[in-house]
Image (cartoon, rainbow, N blue to C red; front, side, top):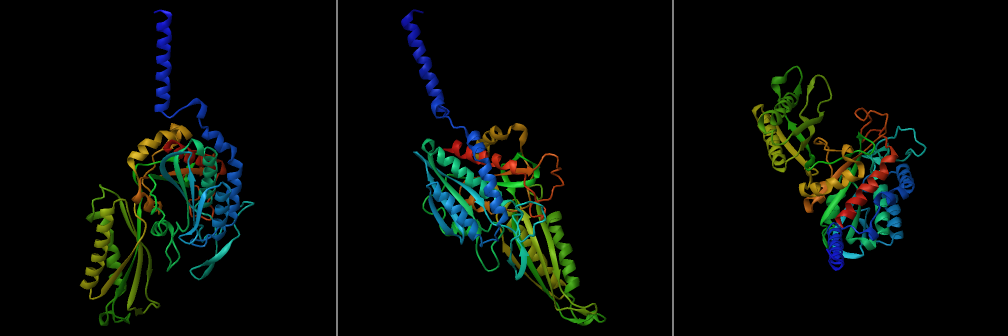
Length: 435
């Protein structure tokens, strides 16, 4: 090969290398070090979390939390809209180049739980819940979700000129459920037009959990968390003296028959090989005295499913069972079902695309596929509108058995704050990869 041929071949190799580099979105002079960005703000994220933890607020009452978020997003120069679904805050970051819109979501409400964790920043807050004064605590980790997303926003603002597209930061109230008589949460944010002007191409969210060790990420494709529906069955009989049951119709015995029969819906009537399901009774209210058979008994319970068709089928079977059994015993039964959150479904294609990204953050050994979770999440509403990915972040410290650690919603729920930077890096990296 002569000198001119060598020069020509070298040019071809350089051009080919440049083409490959562009194809994979990697350029040496614009490489983004997400890990370093996240580590640089770790202390600040922890400080935000501690402040939020010390000042928790109940669903639809997150006034201080909303103000803190709004001030932070405005300080970053984002387009900010507040008072969505009562206290929700949304920030829009415009990337330096044209491209799609993606969304990142954090929930921000606390729970009516009195904190029992010995922390210098433990919650002493109280409020009124269902007519009673209660302690208020971030017993589900929503304080960490807010702090993490505030950090992600700060990261992405620093590199916005390199982003090909825009980011919607959703800080959502009332994930734990709106107070009686009120609307709230993701459903209300969507109802009030969250995605009306421009729908995100995809949405990401996370949830901390004590059921995994610090820094581990759990991600499952397809159905990941259950739907949730609560029900009330009112059984009406005929009051009589306990010594003469034949003179009345006993709603207590009728209720017992209904409870026993309903257990066969899952065990004998639906195909649990297709998807698991749970029907549980949580309360039975009726009668006041040992020798008086009452007129009425109230049964309260919950339905959990991982399939929308099965969900509808079980609700129909529940109502039919209660009605027919009551009639067979001379009583009557009315079933009221309050529809809760849908099944949380992780888009399989999006999971396949982003699983290597999360593995790159924590390592293959720290990325697991968890089992189905019978808890419910209103992130599910967003995932019905656009492809969604919702993952779990372990927060139980080394040396503590995560299988016995106090669970989310416990007054002793504890967060290892070293996990927060992992959440910031993971969400930031998902956004950067998407744009």
